[in-house]
Amino acid sequence: MPRRFLFAVAVLLLAACDPPPEPVGVAASEAETSSVNTPLPRAVAETVETLLKLAEEGGYRDMAKLADQTPGFRSNNAGMSHKDYWYLKLRAGDWPMAHMQKVLEQDHAVVEAAGGRVYIWPALALVPLDQITPARAREIDALLGPGQADAVRAGTPWPGYVLGIAEDGTWLYFVSGAG
Image (tube, rainbow, N blue to C red; front, side, top):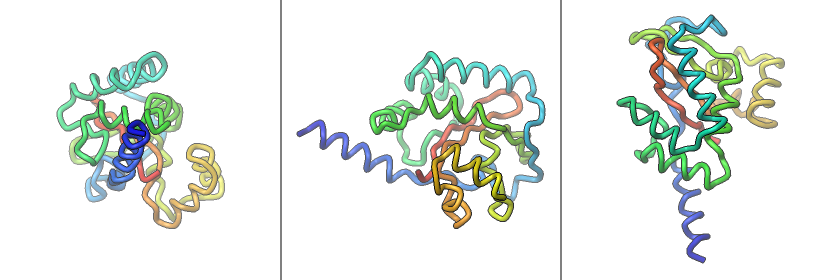
């Protein structure tokens, strides 16, 4: 019985986490332009390679260890440590390593922000609501599950994971949305 109680508490804590602001990691007033799939600078490509290796061979503790190296790194809005948050996600059946790999296999966007360029995965998370075409809706549903494109169109915050890397290769965030 105590195990069920702890699991229920974990699920409730996960549900209480606020979704990240839109667009993630870049204030709307900061974002000047966005482009999709521009070539990655060497530092960003190296970070992507490191993250993919973690996703394939590592675990949530390895992810947290790397995240802890960046002051201000964001994994959640609940004030939890990265390790504790990703452990709860894992216990709830939401494997952060698998999501990281899946997200990094998607197209990326580049946003020009006041602090420099930020490379964001998936690019779909930054598509303006009025530009979700039927083709993009199919891509969103393929990535997040049936009906998620309709939810995003209706104004629901991006329900999937979003990952950001600064132009210098600094891993800035890996957060999950409302779902």
